[in-house]
Amino acid sequence: MDNTPRRRIGAHLLTVLLLTFGTTLLRDAGGQETFNDLTGFTLNPPYFNLAEGSGISATATCGQDEAGASRTDLYCKLVGGPTLGLPTQNIQGQYCDYCNSLDPNKAHPVTNAIDGTERWWQSPPLSRGIVYNEVNVTLDLGQCELHHLSKQ
Image (tube, rainbow, N blue to C red; front, side, top):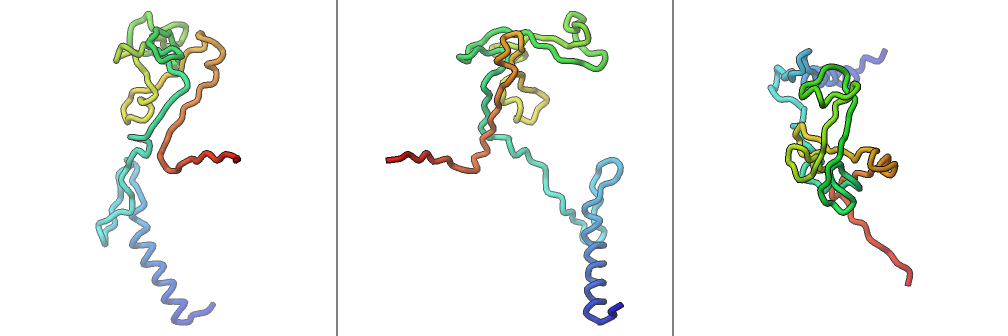
């Protein structure tokens, strides 16, 4: 084993760095940050929603027709157990409700997907047609520009 001063200093420096910064990346069982006893700082960046404020669109949404006009659609989702709500909303192990873009309590626009709330975007039900088996959602983070090139 090479015990040159240079190698020993490197090993000691690595140990100090691990002790100093290693604890800043730890979390306890409750998910709380563990602060470094020497500096009091952590290396964890603050949480932010990258998509918030970005442009988002969908090729179809429950409660809207192809032209974007309001309509009433019945949708259902599977549930794993008892649900809150009216007994009439539970149909054979599914939670069912209506969506309609004119009713704020029944609207599920694609912007709900990135607004940071518990609200959600809902695709159209397949009862409207097999074409809704595939719906595209596009998120524009504004990171690049597309240029159209044409032959002359």
